[in-house]
Image (cartoon, rainbow, N blue to C red; front, side):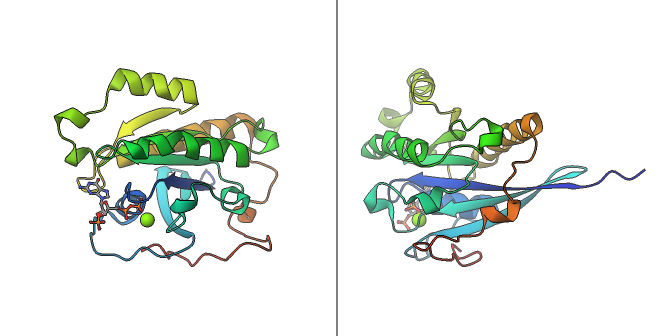
Length: 214
Ligand code: G3D
Ligand code: MG
């Protein structure tokens, strides 16, 4: 007997200060390319990655970029709406971008929760210490300190990533997907219509262009 293919659509946010590599990470993950000559756009862009997770599971990850709105240091609730996970990115060569990490995490926690049928807790967030290919000795991350930071600030885990060298991006995404799938398995599909996650009905929202980030 043929088992039915299950499909999941997950909205994932990618936030962090300007220039930390968010767009590069998304492009690398979605298209497996690293490009230094694309124009960042203003507004919200998203990209879709379709993953054959198992023989009968397909995961569609919708990655939301914040393209040009970093300077505000926070986003509207519309951007966060119905997200089920997030990456917060900082640049290991610019310590001041680490200061933004807690600000972005607080913004996420204050503006989006898991669906109430999933317990309504904070969404899972993974910290990305990006541009690991550029770091000099003095900039190497202190694993012990980052572990402690993650524990104290409610991050699931952290990864040192490089969008340039394609380091750890797949692993970081896998951890986030595994977590969301396990919550889904435990609680069942949220009552909200899955399509609702990509619909932006609110008046102050702007319809993102399909694949607009690339
Ligand atoms: P943002 O979307 O967070 O604002 P971008 O950041 O993805 O636009 O990246 C900002 C700059 O950092 C870009 O360089 C990009 O090429 C570079 N970058 C991103 N990730 C990495 C990485 O892992 N390693 C290295 N070496 N560079 C990275 P430019 O020069 O175009 O501003
Ligand atoms: Mg960008």
